[in-house]
Image 1 (cartoon, rainbow, N blue to C red):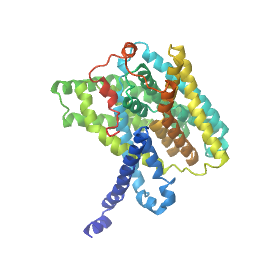
Image 2: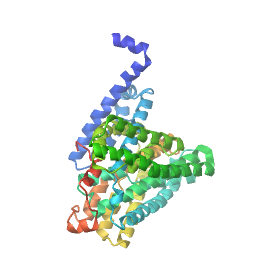
Image 3: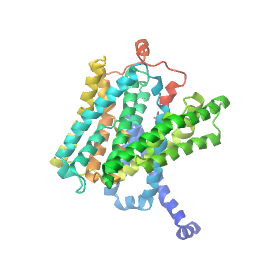
Image 4: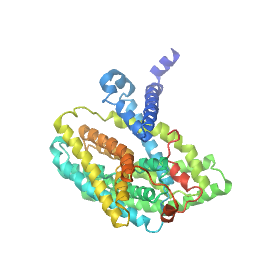
Length: 449
């Protein structure tokens, strides 16, 4: 009774009472769905994505609308948004921390850029075509045909580096030539996607071309600053940690301030906090003690608590109904086909030209179709900024699920039903692995998956 009276007197206490049940429901359902999908041979993250959709209007809002309104009230949603933004920023920091781009063998970085370009441009072109085709039925009234088409093209061109890294590590592919190339290409793909998204949002806000270019230029300046001055300063911190053999609370605080501070700067620039987190992660020292300590302190909290909140928040905006309607079904099929074919064909062509086999090219095209988390971030921003409406958002969520779920099975099928292993030939083509290099990608492995 006293707690009830206190809640009535203090709005902050009432907010805690409102938010905690929502978080608890998200965690339990995400864990259950994640475990189910792992049992089915799919990445845990797909189960978490589905859990988020089930908590939205697609299921919970349909069978128990009062319960959904109570769990995810107008007061709760902003808190969830802040939590998921912090979670994504820290997760992308871990992604950057785990990327051993500097260890790629000679020629691999160039090949990865070619693969990235070949997966982006065709997907962009086909996606733009689909966007123009369905502009009248999917677009909002105040969005121009070119803006809508380019946004759809950009969404279909995304590859989810975090999800791809987890899939590769879980299957022991991160040290194979195919795995290394896929990770490098996906990193380039994501960087291009953030720049494109920043340009689109800046232009849509009414700033025009000059404002858009200002955002892009500020992004470039900040990136250079982080990768030069920021890297040197963080390198000194890393040296201290390696010498002492431990990461102190004060040093960990410096890391968190750097990550969230970079997220704040990129948010103000207009390219969103997650990109700042990723940049700081890439700029971090590569010492074994330093990276292991950061992963131990951050990984479980980010992946088990904060990322599922993001999926739930996305699910609240996803309404999957009316898909038996022939027109809507045609839109969905067109988007899925455009998404897959755009990346698949381009990757095969480049991989073959760079000396890989048709099977390896097909496998690469399959892996680059894993969109997962990144397309959800992309379309959530577009939805929040009024570039796309709820129907287009929901269709693209389904595209994310279908293409991500098909990535690994199609990769296996391309390689004759089995995944490559790291044998002596692979080691000659791939990277020399240090004691800590396997755990660098291992930072993205789901601990319970």
